[in-house]
Amino acid sequence: MRTALLIALLALPLPVAAQQMDHSGHDMGSQMPQQEPVADSAPAQSDDSHTGHQMHGQPEDRPTDDPDPHAGHDMDSMDMSDISDPPEADPHAGHDMGAMEKSDAPADPHAGHDMSGMEEMDLPRSGPPAEAFSGPDHAADAIFSSADMAAAREQLRREQGGAINSLVSIDRLELQAGAGPEAYVWEANAWIGSDLHKFWVKTEGEGEFSESLDDAEVQALYSRAIGPWFDLQSGVRYDYRPSGPDTAHLVVGLQGLAPYLFEIDVAGFLSDDGDFTARAEAEYDQRITQSLIVQPRVELNMSAQDIPQLGIGGGFTSLDAGLRLRYEFRPEFAPYIGVEYQTDLGETRNIAQAAGDDPDRTVFLAGIKFWF
Image (cartoon, rainbow, N blue to C red; front, side):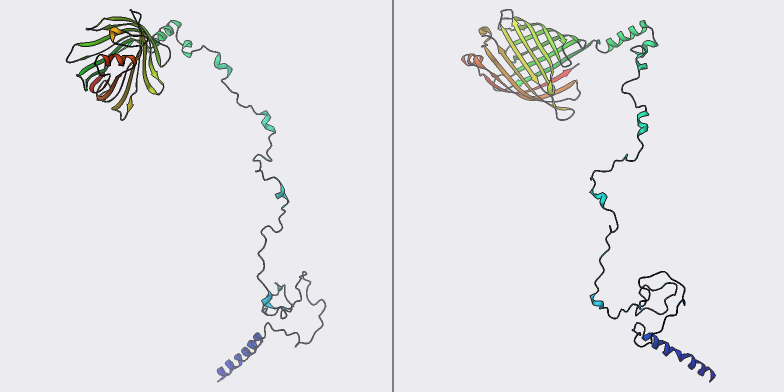
């Protein structure tokens, strides 16, 4: 019984406290008598713009050491619907923007650096030092005797620019078949010498299997390099014709490698009869693979005058243009097939037609190219 009475007594203050909490936030100023403030009743505090204001709805249990800045303000008269969201704070508020009026040029990376010491730095000088020219022109001269160096330089000259080399090359050895009788053609070269000086032997000719040899020529030439790509050649040429007069010529020519790797051979011939003729040959090796090669070839002949005994008229006399496809089993050995168009030109064409010959011929060919 005593325990139940004690619990009832403890429960009595709870409604009263709840009733007091229900009035929190109400304006109680009109119900409470005004009292005079007691002077010097509290310690001095820092001025606050909201000190003494009554803030309704503020919990009564706010700590005393953290005064409410809105304490004592009457907030009943404020229409909360008129309050809009506060504007966002300016991220540049309080910043001094006067410097933005300056130039937009990027800041100097060396601004503020002390550059006065740069005048005293030893900057590197261009070119080698003077000591590099104090010794001999070649360092080996400071170690070996003059006689040893002379012998070594002579050996180097022989092994490089002064070396003696040789080559034999059969550029064309082929069978030609077309509308007329089958024919055979050869063209071969051989040389021996150094990079500057060479002795050349050239030969070429043609004939028909059903008849004897048409003609053959042999040239013996001295060749002198006039640059890294061309040689100037001079010498003699001898023509052999079973059915006509043999002829000897003086020869002056130019042979070499033109731009874009065209092989050029141009020569002029002055016969012992005073007749001048000329010939130009050009060919180009276009590699399809490392072993398969297409070679266009053109040969153009001309004469400065008519040579009736040879059936040649003045001007351009003949043109041969062909295309050969060869396969190099080795660089030294390559069979080929091809096609070639042969035609007489100018007055020589008229002479051939008058003799009953066809001035235009298209032949298919097969041959072999090799060198050693």
